[in-house]
Structures are given as structure tokens and as C-alpha cells.
Length: 289
Image 1: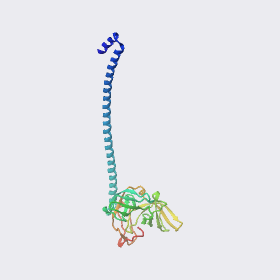
Image 2: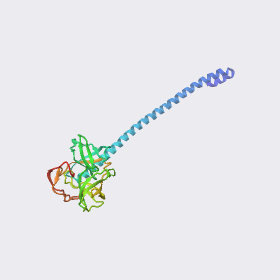
Image 3: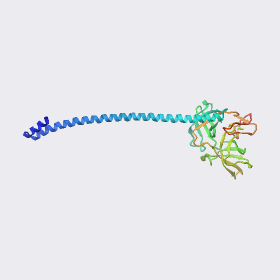
Image 4: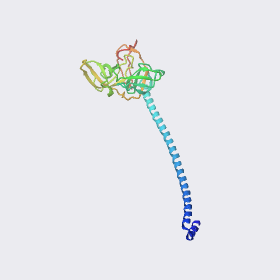
């Protein structure tokens, strides 16, 4: 109504005066409208910000739950592997462990485990997985231990071909380590070994239990330098990337040398196992392991 009156007055009055009054009023209305609009926009932004923060919090919780799920899943898988090994080797003291560090300067993939002397780990303890022998403990701290693998030339593992009964020593080689391969040497020239045979520990040294799988024969070669035969052995476990292992902290015949060569061995899962007899001779620090 006021605007109408002002328009009528403008007919008989100075147009510029009325125009100024109208401008002032409309400007005030525009300012009120803008304030209301700004308040509405600010409220919407605050709501979106709150919702975004809530969603971020829920997403973080889901990530944590997912990590927990995978941790539980991995732990469950480790326990099942441990259970399977315990069934195969009921008379062994087995300790599940995880790799926490690898030695970047070692060409033979040694690693550190999260178990140590507080867990009854000792130097020389064999390290295995459900797929076979991995290595042995070389150094022990309170809560960790260092493991050398059978890919290393330092390995001297007494083994036997489970099919042909030919014996020898498994020792690593720089030529094969990166391929997750090792070698079996000291093989008789009259051997009957062939590709595909499974090689297992003899247990006669007392450093490793008998019948632990070491790997499969992939090739046989003649060494021109010392005119001997050697076999290339592929472990069933990928030692270069293994993360979960088991330390054998005690087993029958540990630290004892067998009085005679192994007579009969069986692979894990078979019904019967004939272990070699053992004497109480102290284990030497050198020689075949």
C-alpha cells in the first residue's frame, strides 16, 4: 500500500525524491531476503558438514573392522595349518610364528620371526610349514629369532629320495636361490633318482626330524668340476615369500645321532612311520645336518 501511495505522490512530486525513497525501501527488502537466504545456505552447509564427518567416522570404523576381519581370518588360517601339522607330527613341540623382517642384504632369503627364547626357541630348531622344511634357527633373542633357509649354502641337510632311496645332502646355491630352488649333492653315481621324486629328511643327524619333506627333484645334472651328480630340488613352499611358519622346538631324537641309516620313512598323512633308532651321542657342530 505504501508503495502505491508513493507512486501516486510521484506524479505530483519530484520524481528523484520518490525514487530515492523507493530505492531505500527495496534495498532494505533485498538485504533482508539475502540474510534469510544466507542463513538457509549456512544451515545446509553445516548439515552437510556434519553428515560428512559422520560418514567419515563410520568409514574409519568399517576400515578397522575390515582389518580386524583379515587379521582374524589370517590367524584362523595359521591355526588350521598348525592343527594339520600337529596331526601329522603329534610327538613334536610346535610353535607357530610369523615373519616380521627379512634381511635385504641376504641373497638366500633369511628372515626374523616374532618368537624367541621366551617362547622356548633355541638355536638349531627346525623351521617348517605344512609344505615342508624351510630352514633352521641361527640366532635367538628374547622375543625374536633369526632363520636361515635351505636356499643357503650354509644348509647341510641329510636327505633321502623317498622313491629310489638314494641319499645325499641338500645345500643351497647362489645360482638357484632366486628361483626358490636348492640342490642335492653327494649323490651316488649309481643312483636311481628321477625328476618328480620327493626328497625328505633322514633324521640321522639329530638336527631335523625324519621324514620332513624338503622338496621335489626337478632336474639331474653332472658336475664337470668334481665329476659328481647333483639334483635340483624345488621346495613345495615358496621360501622367498613365506610369512607364516612353525618352529619345531622339540622332537624325538633331537640332538642325537642315529646308529644306523634310516630304514623306512613315510610321508606326513600316511598310516605308519618307522623312525630310525637313535643313540645318545652328542651332536657335533659340523657336518651333515
